[in-house]
Image (cartoon, rainbow, N blue to C red; front, side):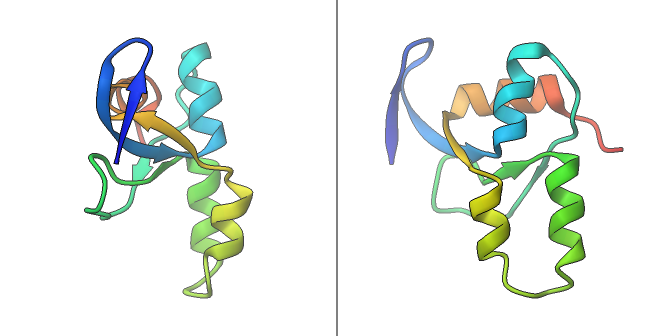
Length: 90
């Protein structure tokens, strides 16, 4: 799947949680975790807050977690930038 990014043109995609999407604009380091998906240009990514919520599931279904994280579509280059801006594990 591809998206036409205003900044980077046509790119593959990656999904990021709503917290990462907001933090990348403000430059806040909220942590950056990602899954092992291989069906898109970048795997799904989420912040430390979402990581804690995911760990609290203890293996139960993550469908509700995924919906509550309100994942946004980022182009692969924007995803890389989000990783650089928000990265760091707490």
